[in-house]
Image (cartoon, rainbow, N blue to C red; front, side, top):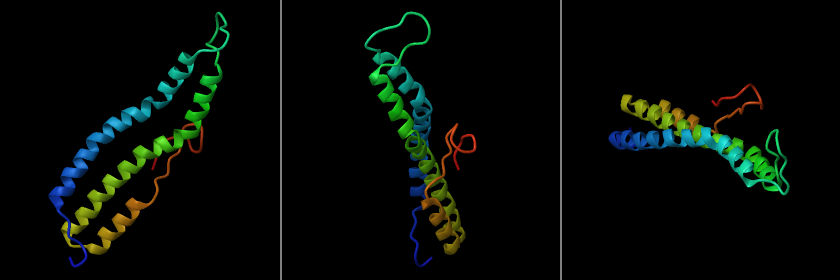
Length: 128
């Protein structure tokens, strides 16, 4: 293995830690929309309306626009972490087998940006 010098146990340890952090990140990503909606409602309005749904004030509208504008980036965080960990596992597996070419291909695939489709935008949600 002329071009590679991987500490296999080190990779397993680090990717394990990243996996734990990804679970927390996944929870945070799922809560993002709900938390932003709650913040928008809590921000209130200049004049309240009794009955019916809570009105949206200027701060709430700004938060809604911010959430809409950043939802894709927030979703990419989790997708990028998962793709990186999976790529590290795959490349290390090929390294163990002595296949540098396949290890390099796995590494290259992991470096590509993940594709994320949000609900209501594209094919119905999820990420690749």
